[in-house]
Image (spheres, rainbow, N blue to C red):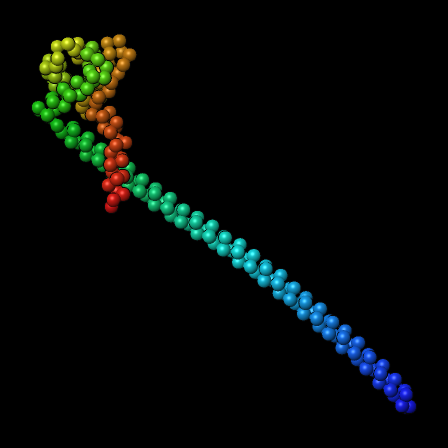
Length: 197
């Protein structure tokens, strides 16, 4: 082969090699760019997954804490109600057990409260066991009061029910009614004690 042909062939071969190397470099750069793009997309996807997972974990944590707080609150309310009921049971037993002068004094006070609420003209009803104490209290009260002991009995552990002569106003001052009116205050007192514990 002639020198000119050999030079031409070498020149063409060099140009071809340069083009192939340039194409390979361009391909390599393109692949590296794609790899970098995929890496960024993957990193963004992983970040989003992690962010979503963290939000979901926080949401689950809040639900668990909220559920535990609610259960604790419900347990406190059950304990409070149990304590209030026990206090009422004890008060009921204690009130039922009163007799004699203390009982008559309590009945007189209940009658006076009733008069203060509905006025001096009233019918009084009571449990059969309290008739004697009520009759005695009526006699000892102010003579301006016009109180009539009604023969119709009231189902109660003690106390009285006063009604105006026309029946338009009724004041239940039985032990049970008084205790029930005290229930909200007792519940608050028990709750305050339980919160300190």
